[in-house]
Structures are given as structure tokens and as C-alpha cells.
Length: 182
Image (cartoon, rainbow, N blue to C red):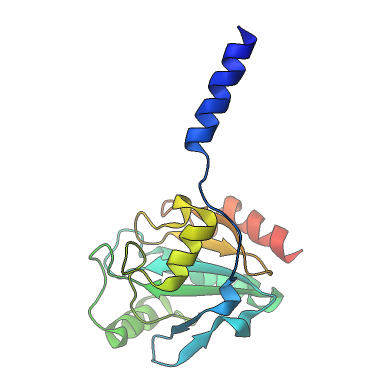
């Protein structure tokens, strides 16, 4: 009977394991993306820093998380950590232009962490960073909604992902950041 249970659990694990290869032919530092003001963000500029990549949207019920993303940025930026907001209309909740998004974030949340241009974050049209995340970390790296968080370590590899409901300043996220930075 024990052998049957072990076999059943093993089969279950095979079918539901994370299918990500994690081979990392590239790391986050190999990518570039446009900033919200049009300049290029070269992730190699963040080499040896931890990164929290977050797809954001102005009209989402989670938009108030901008406040806590800004807090994280202020607490950890001098310790080798960067928050990067990626505005996306993948879930039809973002403004139409970078200029509108930038103004909205500055006026309502006093955001000064790096923000990118508007990008798709899922499907065939996703920015290559999100395709890279899926290839190396699996389906948990694909945003199911706005304010999905991808935590990347100082080696440029994904450590963990956090669903939209996970607040940026939650113990779950801050413990993971502290672990990377220490």
C-alpha cells in the first residue's frame, strides 16, 4: 500500500511540477526596455541589484499598491534594490499614454521609482522580459492580473513571484528581499 501511495504522489508531482527549464541562457541584465519618458532602460545598469518587476495599471483595484511599491523603493534602494513598474493594458485597465500614466503616478502616489513604457505582459505580444520569465520560471511568472510581482536576485535570476493580492510590503515579500540583500 505504501508503494502505491508513493507511486501515486510521484505521478502527481510529475504532472504538476513547474515546467520551467531555469537554464538561464540570459539573465535580466541582458535585456533593455523603454522608460516611461522614452529613454532606454538597460538592465545591465542594475547588475548586482535585486529587482522587483511589477506590471501596473491605473484603473485597477490594486492601484493603491503604488504607495507600498514606493515605500519598498525608499526603504531598500540604497541597499541594492530597485522597483520597476511596467504599465500594461493586458487587462484593459491602463491609461492610453505614457504621459498620462506618469502624471497620474506622480500626482496621486508621488512615484519616483523607474517606470517603463506601456507593454503587454502575457501572450504572444508580451515583452521579451515576460517571455524570458515564463521560460525560466514557469507559469507563475505570467501575470494573471495587474500588480503581479516578479522578484529577481542579484545574479539576474527569478527567485519568486507574487500574485496581485500579495501586498508589496508584506512580510512574505520583505523577507525574500532581505534574504537576497543579506
